[in-house]
Image (cartoon, rainbow, N blue to C red):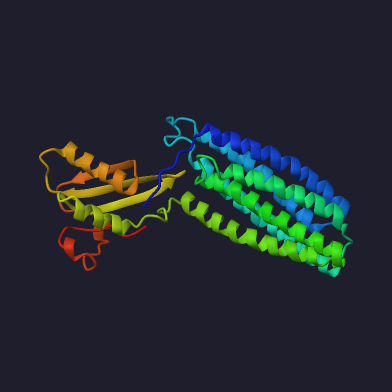
Length: 315
């Protein structure tokens, strides 16, 4: 089933702002520490923190824009901006990961000296900063928002990067084996790349008006037909998502009701109660659909509604 989420909590903006300030401050510290110690793991983590700061800033702007009311030019408001921000954030993570891979490979051919103790101090401070930022992002009213999750993903990558830098620093301090630095940089980058790729696919799917993953159009068609007796057939179903809000349009072939508005209200209430779809545009029809687009039907799969008309294919 779908889940309905809020988009405009002021507390969420405050948490994003606090996470941005913390991340930006320690990004500067890690850049300085990485340059002084010669650690690629620290510089990789600083690179993540740089994109984190940008991601958090974009997330903050996106959340504030999403509060703006709809107007004649933007009838859904600016909710889609959060998805666009998540898309950009995922792309930056993928590009950054590719850069770290390349730099790590160069380090294998041309090892660089690494100062373990300064690296350890900066990595521990960075870990504490990332834990704080991650906690802030996961205790707001919009923790399910795709854009806030994108920002949290950046911070999670940073947190893993700090752990990797700490492990590398300890090994270098006790064994002076510097290849551990690029090795852990690659390992952390692989973990981040996996999550970034999943986020990129999700944001592209939403930008392309894909059916939200929690829905099955065919199941919804059958459900409405079986649970509201007046409905003979559901077709021309279009289901998409704006921000975190599912939207829907459909045609319903119905038995001519005594009270058109009452039946319409029942359908809308059923969608809200069972699927959390608050915005549904419904066109009721009394005749069988003869449109060519209605040829996509699955009567053989739904014997309970054979002869009821047509079913639109699953998007």
